[in-house]
Length: 399
Image (cartoon, rainbow, N blue to C red):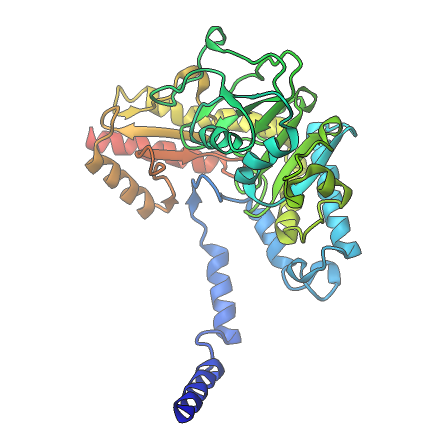
């Protein structure tokens, strides 16, 4: 037994000590050069494309941030350097969407799904909460919320998530703790075009997939949150903006990491925050300010989405977009090919040919199928135009 154990230890040590293949300086330089020149057209729904300038800046600072001799990944979250990074990101966000001082900004973990629990745990009081269920994410939000209190759908669940029912069909609860809605449903491509009336009830909005893609008045909301991995950074950090009068009412069984009061008092550092994700988010916010801000992103989003919707609407049914035109998303465009339910052979061919042209991540979500093009802030007009040209060419060859 002992003899075998020693042989095993010797074998493990030999594996550990074996040189790692292809990681000498020459190959590393070659691989870095290849990475710098190879950039595909990424239509992923999230994590999604980031601006090239942001990635280049992060690359240049990876080993040596601000001449400190180490990178942000290695930086203490309590260091003066990181405090400056986070403070600047917060100020840039306030500048971009005019956030007043009575709204507090938290940099948390757990994604939007974490806030499905965080919101009711912080805001649910004696009454119920109303939920607009317009797609997969809001459906998950109400399911999670029901664990902590009475959550009521504003209207009956539809057979398909392709529209937002008219106001005549809404039933809001008087004295509700809050009203929740998802501003843009990433999977189904349904986007609100205005803020729902709440009659003074705090409004909670999940803006994960269209945050900073158009201007909005934060003072109409009680809470706005957004996972960063679509429009404002890489996966790992969730921005939560909370009106200060709603802080301090968490339930007794709310975990401290989700308690807005605890996290605000600790500057989002009750636990170790996702430091690198916050850093990348800060770089994206800088990039936004340098490129015309949220107003510019809004105009570009309308231009880009129109390019794709025009191809669909002019295709005489070859491409079929299921969402009501009044609520079509600018960020996520789902469609089928060949018929409203899709022709599998055509859709597989479309995806294969697109990938051959370096257009990736166009496959629709597994729950709905088909095709989905996500056009976040980092997706350029040029890239979108190439997709539109490909769609026209594909139709001409396969109609």
